[in-house]
Length: 229
Image (cartoon, rainbow, N blue to C red; front, side):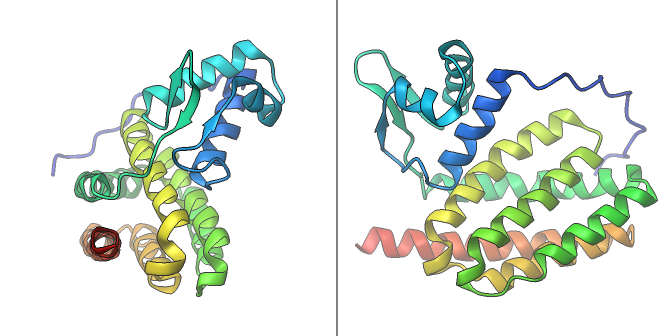
């Protein structure tokens, strides 16, 4: 792996726009399956859901379409993208290497205050153990993951991982109760967090590989069952 350099100064964060708000509302609705895969919705439905006007909604729809989460058809309306269970394995393959880089960046660049935040967020993830906890587990794991993205101080890496992690969250909401294991998931998240807190790159590498191995196993179980059915 390359040496981790000191980051360039990050640009000042802009004020959230109405389009940003619409994007976040729609993204969560798609990820949590409130908007079901393959569902058809109208622009009016989306405006009601987001609570903003047509222009910001259209901006948000364009961003989500660019990320492959929906398709806008002027005649047929808006169709929510299906979950591609086979492509999930491709995501995991890429995520493995990007998460190693993420861990290296955070270990090199995070402040002690940042690491206290990692410790606190990991403790929240660790509370959840069973399928009844799936929604809370995925939500808390996402808070930890996105915090690490910010601590990497590499917005390009963060954006790449966000796309992959969004697909992973959606996959968990769809199949986690039946095929996943919340307890195993929380162990992997907390082991990586512990390695980062200790600033131990070798331990982090082992934690990432173990986590990705489990996600491959989980995904292959879904692929096998859905292919048989």
